[in-house]
Image (cartoon, rainbow over all chains, first blue to last red; front, side, top):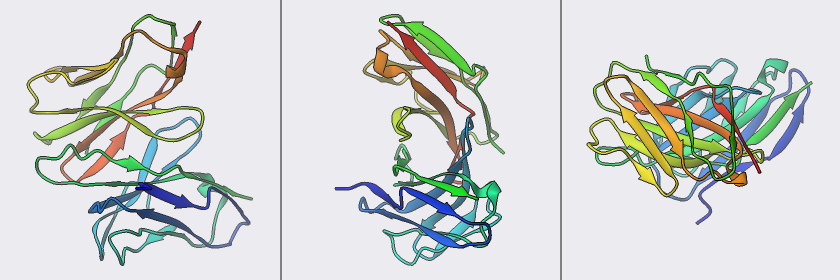
Length: 115
Length: 113
């Protein structure tokens, strides 16, 4: 049981480039999330998904896109990378519903630098 | 909207002593959950403890306990018998309504020998 996996672990992008951050979970969780963490700050929600085919914006969605075609995968797409997107990106998943604690399990993070 | 406030940017404690990390929250949802996560220097997010808004008793998990005062909207984390490995960032977070977590800015805890 690998939990939540993220690739790559590190990436340097040039301004204007695009990339996809991969996230997968093998716990059959219904909810998945993308957060970013800027230096010295807490996590801010970018996008989340309540199930395959359903996504919604979080607090800071601008400059990002997501899709969820399967229960397991939730990739995050950065279009036209900007220096303001330099951050650590965390993917998380949870089994959310009545009677559950809704604990979110986090991946190890992707450290992205845009130069 | 929901909000978490952690007013202590940093805390120092000696090994084997207890320490309390403060967290206050704001939400209009009557049903919510409060979480504490630990983030060591390696960067991963580690779940510590959970408290549901309707739980009658304060949550405990080993050396971690949550001092939940609903009327004051506070959910302070108490770490007993601190260890050097407890040095890390600690985040309080609230979960309500729309199934998303809102995090505070965190408290850096340093445990000295």
